[in-house]
Amino acid sequence: MGRSGLICAFLLAVCCCSRRAAGVPGEAEQPEPELVEVEVGHTALLKCGLSHAQGNLSHVDWFSVHKEKRMLIFRVRQGQGQSEPGEYHNRLSLQDKGTTLVLTGVTPHDDRIFTCQGKRRAQEHRIRLRVYKAPEEPSIQVNTLGISVNSEEPVEVATCVGRNGYPVPQVTWYKNGQSLKEEKNRVHIQSSQTEESNGLFTLRSVLQAQVSKEDKDAQFYCELSYRLPSGNHMKESKEVTVPVFYPAERVWLEVEPEGMLKEGDRVEIRCLADGNPQPHFSIIKQNLHTREMEEERTDDNGVLVLDPAQKEHSGRYECQGLDLETTTSLQSDQQELVVNYVSDVRVSPAAPESQEGSSLTLNCEAESNQDLQFQWLREKTGKLLAKGQALQLHNLKREEGGGYRCLASVPSVPGLNRSQLVNVAIFGPPWMALREKKMWVKENSVLNLSCEASGHPRPSIVWSIQGTANEQDQEPQSVLSVLNVLVTPELLETGAECVASNSLGRNTTIIFLELDSNRTSNLSTSTVSPPARANGTSTEKKLTEPESKGVVIVAVTVCVLVLALLGAVLYFFYKKGKLPCGRSGKQEMERNTSI
Picture 1: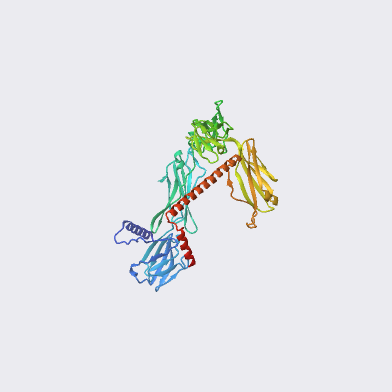
Picture 2 (picture 1 turned 60 degrees about the horizontal axis):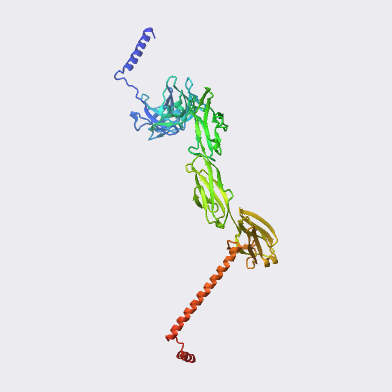
């Protein structure tokens, strides 16, 4: 071809290009491909839309176009399909009388253009297959080392990772629900993506920022935005908080528990500051004598533990903090700690003694930093006897001897009280718990005989039989004696007598022993029959005898009067003839007898 031919060919090409660019009427333009969307792993239906071959696609070739490379993947001849060797082999089939190509097991690699071409190659139909895969839940990793507010450049706050998505999702960072944007020297977001061998993508995004003290509680999270055939979707990570370091500006002291403190409480004194990390603390207390501030010994956490708290712990406390980064020393305001107390509860007289029938006054005193309330309680029963510092006891009886407790309490501080026990001794001869008792025993068995007596002065106990005796103090004026003996025929005959005596008299308890012949043989322990209680002295037993004789005399007198009245009534009826006791009555009775 000569030079003139080349020039003509060049001009022809330029003319064709200009006509296409200008959209010359009559020049056919290639239409946009049909869009088909499907998720990874699902099935794609590619319908051939050749206008001249509706319902008659007996001769069609299917191609895939990837990176401008066109490759035959399927043939249709006489309505029969055949897959070409390659990546689509065994994944393609026909449907709807050959009008639809079915692609199974869609993967990200199938995201491309497919074309179907009829026998007349000038006509073809293009399909754009879009493939989607939702990423996994985003994971977020916070910078656990923390960020200082003094940092001059943005520092890593957290890293967000979204795995196995297609195509690559979009990431958005949030702080306290507000989205973050790139900001020079303040906020920087750096994202990267990695394509896995299966065609899916892993997104990694790093948030860097400068922080302030106000960010110490800020919540950061990331959001992944992605598309599926059903529409747009998003997934959020969990919220994280990054440690923010800032110097302290204020130090204060905290006491637990709050409110009124009392002796015996567990009290914790700790120092706090508005910085992070907390400075090194010291707790100091003012010496009550020298007025100097002295450092207190704290535990490993810098907490001063008062357990139990005592009144000596009261005083002025303060905290001193040293910021190890800035070497700044801070000091808190002094705080007054008051440990409320009740102490030195005293009863006078300390060892009260009195005669029966006399009166006695007990006085109670105590020390406290608060107003006190006094109560008197009976030790045995807990019964409230009186309120106030003095307890008046009049016309004392033997039974009123024993323990009395003075309770000093502080109404304004619940649970704060102290008490003192005092024992009142009533002079008198021994008083036996039981006058007599019967015990069922087995011969040749070993048993314990017990005897209890009380009195003032404190009585001593002796037994009428031999054995091993052991005495136990029950109360200041009471004693219990236990005698260990062997049951012999002689003991069964004589029984046992317990004799209690002091300088004012003596008294006894008699124990009768009988064989337990009517009880089961496997009963190995001795039993006691229900005894009659007695207030026990020999004098009291003598007083009961005339009382019982008087009762008998009264009963006899009543009976005589009743009999006399009955005789008078019978005599009255006899005089009136109401009783058949005459001769005629006697004859009538005899007649009836003979019949």
